[in-house]
Image 1: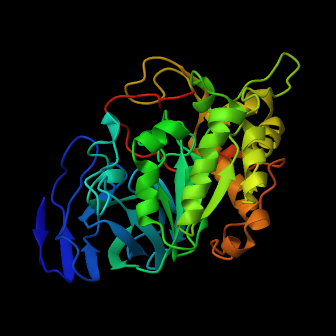
Image 2: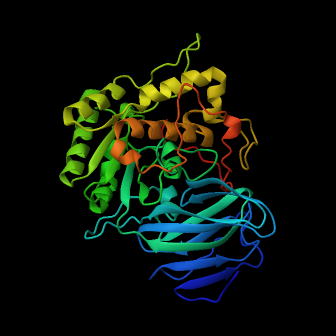
Image 3: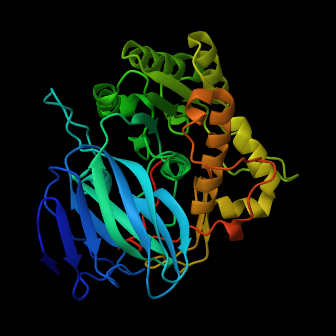
Length: 406
């Protein structure tokens, strides 16, 4: 790999050959002012789809110029740990289009403090927490000619606090609604995802993730909070005691900073009885979320009920498409079949994100005006055909590791 015509304001990049088995990452100078990166034709392919740019922590507007003079193109853009930013942007031969999205780049440091977010081992060095913006250009025929980057100091933040069903999952075939959500917002609104697999309200707090949000949050920013899968397994805890108490503390801390907390009940796991009826495995935890939201007079998204409608509509067999089910050797380094009734496929995560978006329209009209023009309406009782939600898979990891939590 060689970097050509290097300057702080404009960087031309040309890649010769292929670095690594799976993908190629290159970096340019640290951000100092708005900059444009020109990409040489043929540099981006499905096997080497990544661009990585050194940037300090912050929020950035990214404009990508998509299309090719030589052929039609179909490009999906992801950021950091597989956050879906642009979905299947198609251009005809000789046509180009510019699309803009807003992305969060964050590090474990908590400004003004000697504390840091306590990363889990699989997060250390991962794209979500390094001092870089990593972009992935994927799809049947991806084509990008240039990237423009400018800091956005006024973007509205939508912070996410949650577990494996919310986090930006690093590796295929797992995904979460949190990493699909950015695709549904227009530029100027950024989804900052601090969720992580295996966490409960208490452990999220102990790892300084809530403190990181509070440190970054500005008046008017939103904090979406969805836990429950792991909280219900903790000893010496209960839905209306420890769990509800922790939720109240989160709400109070966010409101004290003039932020806007939004409480979300946990979605159903995939568990049907012999008669084909979906079973509630969360006990009183969804009701506890509703109770705290009513007490504190904050918005409540009943994802438990909405996801129940979705999975019931899909049914016993078709609901497997929404979760991670795959025969052995479907993915590299996968000798055993996958049957995960808690974590979601790209399709399932996408459908749940659509559930969240529809709830935003109803519960948060002031935020709904910031949705992307093509966000569309959604009825969970009439889910999308899985064959029509074609989110291209990212290059596979060296090892296949199921997310923590269940």
